[in-house]
Length: 241
Image: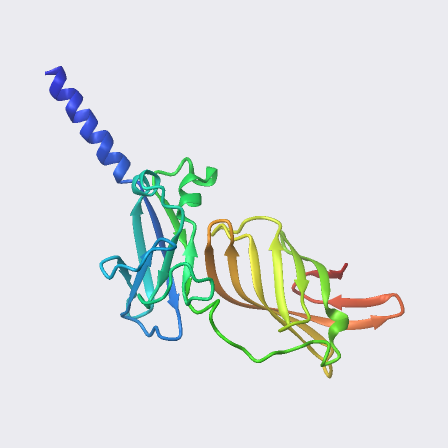
């Protein structure tokens, strides 16, 4: 009787371990995705297997699930997601996204969770699209280039806006509810209206490889004084460092 009881307990414990999953869900965004496509996944350096995929529904939503035990047992550090199986999975310029599943599976943030459920979008053309070159200096707007301290509600953004391509990047003082730690996007300055604008495009967590597409804008009225540039906004307090 004890033998059978021990066997039942082993089976139950094994089933419980394998029921613990990493679950990722969000939207797929890519130039060749309209909804209903397959998104394939593999490990860096390995070929894509047409049998390993998640479905993108008509609204471009996806759900991915993998056993945490499998990730740990097979020492899976990174999964690469793409719609084109002919791409090189270790090409940094490929239309693909890497998610650090090994880091997620071992993260202390999720140690008390039976299963890890995270939101992330798959922005598959994020790193592989071309754009015309834009330069703030050529437009006489480089005086805004630099680092900023932006406090809005309970969040502090440590902002850097760049000359090349009018790039906006910010580190957040605390993780969001979706575990995001940084933001990226662009910026512009309207010389006639004297308004500086930050355009938020994505929030991300580089450690985990998670990215969420977002659309948000912050507008600042600009006043130039002998002491420097002042920014006034209902969005929060912005100071150039």
